[in-house]
Amino acid sequence: MQKIISSKTIYKTIIVSLLAGLIIFYLFKTLIDIRDFAEVLKRVDILLLFSTIIVSFSVPVLSAFRWQFVLRLVGHDTSFKQSFSIVMSVWPLSILPGRVGDFARSYPLRNQIEPMGTAGAVLFEKVIDVASLLLLSAVGFLFLGHYGYAVILFLLSTMTIPMLFLTRSVSRFLPQSLSLKLRPIFTHLEFKNLKSKYFLFSLISSLTNWWVSVLMIWFLYDAFGASLPMTTTAAYFPLAIFIGLIPISIAGLGTRDSALIAFFIDKATPAQSLASGIGYFLIGYILFAIIGIPFFIKNFFSTQHTDSQKAN
Image 1 (cartoon, rainbow, N blue to C red):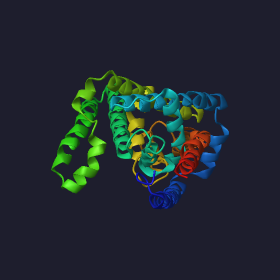
Image 2 (cartoon, rainbow, N blue to C red; image 1 turned 180 degrees about the horizontal axis):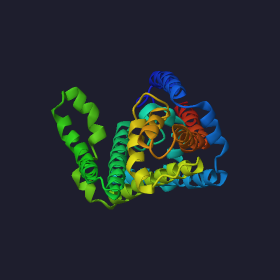
Image 3 (tube, rainbow, N blue to C red; image 1 turned 45 degrees about the vertical axis):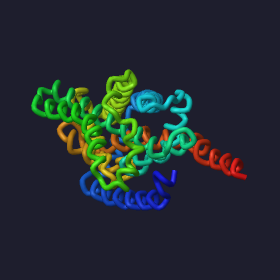
Image 4 (tube, one colour; image 1 turned 180 degrees about the vertical axis):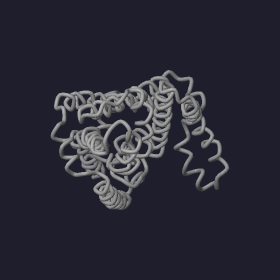
């Protein structure tokens, strides 16, 4: 795991994220009336909140299927059980900015796949996610009648994956020492993989996964008293997710919320957007990070103990 994410990097990113989060919430304090926020929390619809939690449990399942399909896409056969265990084990690391904790997935697979090879699979998965989010947003804008935005986002979506393969080609012209280091990442990234059924399965599972996220935020806004049109939610929430990936906060907390406030200012009060954003963070990240702790211990600490015994 140290080859992918060093402990020094983890400590730095957590400290920077905490400081950035404090600054962002200080700004929120100047923009949002605390009494309004408290009132929004008191009036929450518990049934809708519970419905959001129920819907959210499909996210780790879909994430596990996506990871399994991506690994098979790049030539590594993994069972759903192992894929699910790995996905859950890195959820506690989701607090790292930009979801870089996902690259720690290489550790449980270190005896089967070269770490940098797993990093290539993670990179491929992230590119598929970007394409899926752009496509969902494009469909949302299409139904809103904003055809210009829809076309731009659709073109960006279709260009995203080919750009990854272009990067693979460009990497050959880098200095030899750097090119050799990057080679394992790009080994299995070939155009022929796009014809594989596993690419289609990966894309479908990614689209479904992010659609569930759209449903979650839609339910949350409704729970906190703001009724958003589904098309508006589908158009703007993927963009808010992108903003949340800017590596200056913990799991997008603060950056994603500020985007929600700006995007839905005509549909919801800032207090409702903040409550919905925090709810999404608590359910989508903290809840599954807690559930993932036993998987984290099993895959990262138990395996270390086993390896040390074998070495002795």
